[in-house]
Image 1 (tube, rainbow, N blue to C red):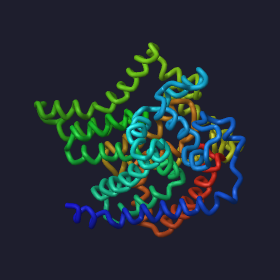
Image 2: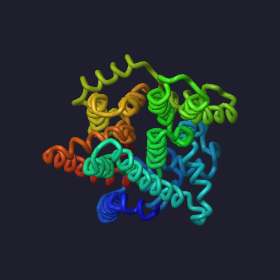
Image 3: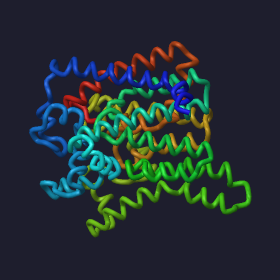
Image 4: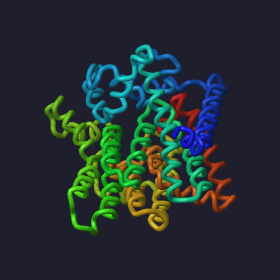
Length: 389
């Protein structure tokens, strides 16, 4: 079994290590040449260590600082009430795992966090290739993995962020449901919804797959059991929500945290459409990147929305619906900020890119060169606190 696994995935694993080593070598080579942004470090986000060493500051930048603090202290022991409220926006699975594995790394939360992200990223490329192989030839499946590894926001799959953990869990859920293993798919979906708010969206592809397998036949005990498993993702979100209500006594604390502390408030599809229209109209005024409304985030969002239309035509309905929801969901919070991070969680888009790049050498060259150019810039910007994603 191990031999079979290795024969199937050895090239993908080798590609993963080659890309990661190359990017980290670039960071090490350029780190002394570029000044660290002490200004951004001083004013943005919660500081896990105000006089932190370069490794902690660079590989746990911005949100990573919050996860390390929560791993050690839970949702408490913040220096101000505002920081306390801000912490509720960070879902619990990642810091919980950090706390669990810290003793294995001499009590270092950073080492535990990076290890979890590394394992999650490795699992992600294996699972992505497994799903892609079910939908397209091997060459296109490998190309999908390549584009994922060099995607401009790939830095978040290598540092103390939840992206790698969430992506691995979501892919595991999709792969299991495609194989008809609803109970296992539900478990992974439940955990994904404890890792990031987007996890709740897994309900939709799982429900669609259930309908395609059971919906046209008379219901029986097995079908009802699978339907219950397909509904596990909302239960994951509800678990964290109930925990916050329990510790605060406030049934609206999660939404208040996002709205009052982070400027994200749920709106309608009409609001999202108006937001896009406003950003397009003022595109020339928007900087390449800032902590609000960057051109890069807007372009990524528009491209991925357009690609979702093609995904509807080429892939399974469950994939298409999931890809659209992953792009639209962040827009319902009234901001285009961080869209280049959020769209990277949509595996169907990488399947489509794999198809496109395999069919056209020119498109493959264009996707690869543009991705690498942006990726190198953004990796370097992130570790020096010039870009928050």
